[in-house]
View 1: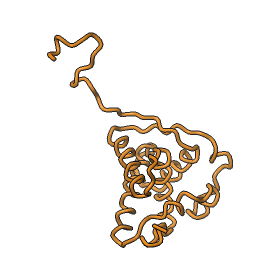
View 2: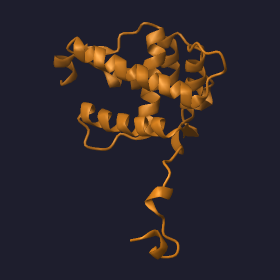
View 3: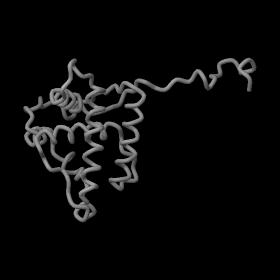
View 4: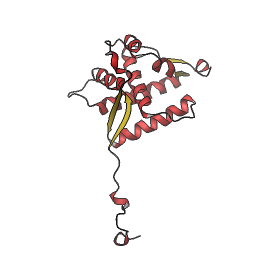
Length: 166
């Protein structure tokens, strides 16, 4: 259909722009994890939450590939299972305020590439975890941040493939 003949209110394909901001529902713990992860990054300016998440996602993918190269898999239950206080102790972080775990938080992702990367990571996680249910973005974000922070404490979050399938 020619542009001049488009119905009123229609959108031409040339005017569609990629989504560059997306709010994702997470636990408040994610906001605190972002601040802790930002402290681990070397940056000339204070990193934005989206910059921190992009670094954590990149790191998580590298860790997963390194585990596969060794014939191991990441033990997601070991990373996500501990409550916040136990996680902080394992990662060598200061104790988090008690009220963080149960409260809600809207994480605003900035940038079309980051948004695509988060949703692609959700899909990849769903495949690796063998879970038919879709992995939610809040879970993927929290997992990436926890993996990133655990590495700073040199924790081993992988297990042999034989044990992971049990």
